[in-house]
Image 1 (cartoon, rainbow, N blue to C red):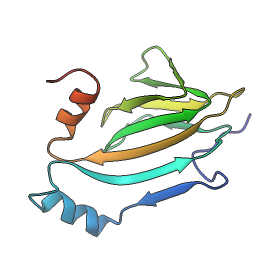
Image 2 (cartoon, rainbow, N blue to C red; image 1 turned 60 degrees about the horizontal axis):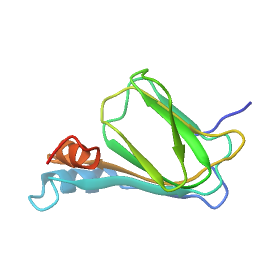
Image 3 (cartoon, helix red, strand yellow; image 1 turned 60 degrees about the vertical axis):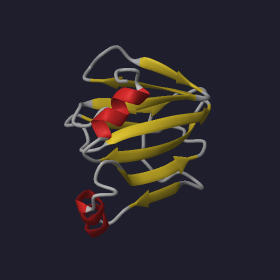
Amino acid sequence: MTSQQDGFRNEILIILPIPLLEQLAAHPLTAPLYISDIGKFPQAPEHLVERRQGCRQYILIYCHQGTGWFYVNGEKKRKVKAQQYFIIPAQQAHAYGSSTKDSWTISWIHFSGTRAADFFDYLTGGGG
């Protein structure tokens, strides 16, 4: 089986340029929380991402249809179904991918900021 990170038919992929990210990180209105990358992969068969060193940003992935899986820091692989989301914490080794039998359609964002950890805690039930 082959696998791929991106390059899917009709995909949307927006990565903000580094100078803009530096401005967002420095500005008092946006420094707490900002998006650095955003996209959608429709019908993404063989989609597989593995980051042994993690990612500098948090990653929120929403599954529109199909199924997939993910794991963080080598923990047990978790299944993802349509209408579910998961969040990968920043700086954590992880992997995720589409089911081989029922490929997923996903939207995703990478987010950062001085309050990104608080947002992660809130969305995962770890914070108030």
